[in-house]
Image (tube, rainbow, N blue to C red; front, side, top):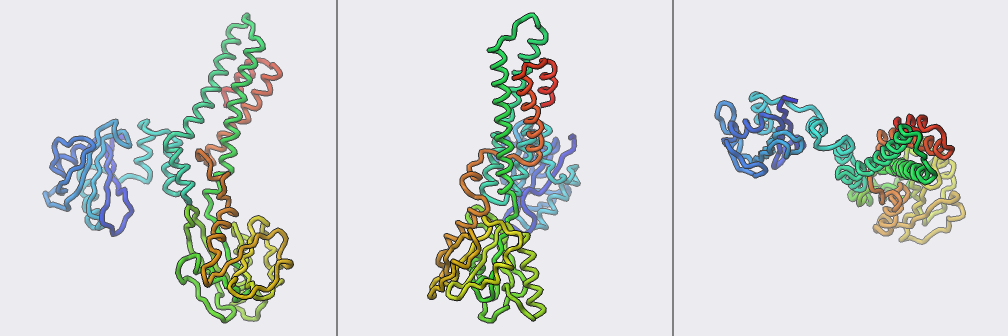
Amino acid sequence: MSETIVALATPAGDSALATIRISGSLSECFTRDALSLPYPSPRHSYLANYKSNDAEVIDQVICCYYEQNKSFTNEKMLEISCHGNPIIVQKILSDLVCRGARLAEPGEFTKRAYLNGKIDLVQAEAIAEMISAKSLHAIKLARKNLDGNLSSIISRVQTGILKVRAKLEAFVDFPEDDIGSENYAEIISLVSESQLITESLIDSSNRRSILDKNLRVILVGAPNAGKSTLFNCLVGFDRSIVSDIPGTTRDYVSKSLIFDDLEIELIDTAGLRETSDQLESLGVDNTVELIEQSDMVIAVIDSSSPYPSELNGLLSHSIAPESFVIVENKSDLKKHNNPEKYPNNAGVITVSAKNKVGIRDLVKKIKEVNGFGKENTALEFSVNLRHKKSLEEVNAHLLNATSLLKDQQDDLIILSILKQA
């Protein structure tokens, strides 16, 4: 890692400010030569003119130098904040490359932090998870991993296994010493404790997967039930065309939304009905296909009209009962008695999309259906698929070791199993 790397740390494009990050031995040289700061105090901000190799002032910048072993990568580092015009940014990047730096590969700063011992692999993964998180809860979990929560739990498991191995190796090396029932009970207790911890981590991985999904919520129903009005109400502006003419929406319209801390893709679809119009019929077919691909189906009905019972047949496409909700829209009008015709076990929410009544209850229901209850939001760490696979292997070895210990099998066999854990 002798090369000095450079990259834009902020998103590309027009902005008020942009931050350029440099890591490597040349950082100190750039501070002296490009910024005219021969002896910068580490971790202090300086206002300086950035001068190119040919002494041209490119921009007035704020810079901060970090000494070795006290930076994110554990190398000498320099951060330059310039104006966010892409032309200025590119000019500075090009000049730094001319001075000997190399453009960093994606994730290379984090890679260097890991290779230089600044963070462990779990923390390196947590940085990527924070960037790609789909909800505030997922961000919080990644933050906890970055703080070392998961690493400390895994360390407890490793320590417990090492203690057991040390005791068993002592028994193997000194067979004349009597192990005794108390020692065996202690060893079994240590293995069981480690095994229970791994099981809890595996369980948290199963619940955590909900927080990582691109959740898809679809609005379906008969024409003129108010799907598009409800869609626009949830989105916050008119994204779908609202009309009294049946069949106005012939293709689906989607929008990514964040409800408090839950990100979803909300989809407004063509009205479900039998039709001879070829284009509208294609829209209905698309809706049926989308139903099968969605995490939650919201059937919007006009509560002032009889329930369109033909919806039950169209809505029978691979929908789990807990993922299906009926929204009785137009609560501001006289209600027609419908509940006895609803599908069994369907949750019901009453709203007036036109008057924005009952929307909070619907949003709460969307979060509940998609797993954002206390059980999933109380997780203390984030266990990804790589972690889960490794933990399942460890758990299998620990279960095997526990069984052999209880049967007082040969210590060498148990040791060989624990060495694989």
